[in-house]
Length: 137
Image (cartoon, rainbow, N blue to C red; front, side, top):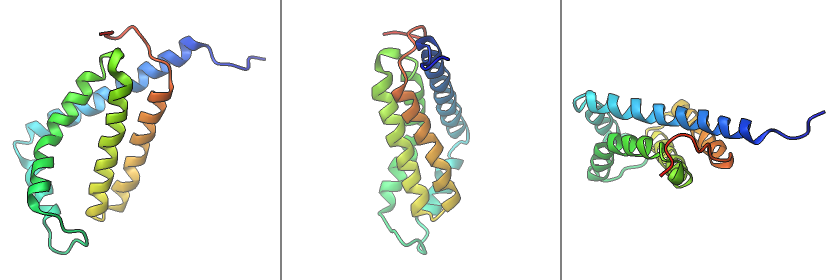
């Protein structure tokens, strides 16, 4: 009976998780850029709704919503670089926690819950040993 998992399998699992993370962020970032401001305008209107329990200045939301597509593209691209993967996996987790906070502010409870698997995806990728055959810089 085998009691341990082969390191090659763990590295391949890390690669599959990281590819999933990369595709998720690249598609999300590109789709937001291609929305021609629709993403930004929709969520800015949601966050500036006066009936929300948490009210922050609109400039905070405006700035973050403007940066989101570029944050997603940047993290997605840098996750290709195996050498920096752990740093950017931590950034991935922090980014998805920020989205979770945003959905909490909007009181979108299903979306809050939907962010948890993305955070756990990052934690799993962080724990696994790196697959060195992507781009190692």
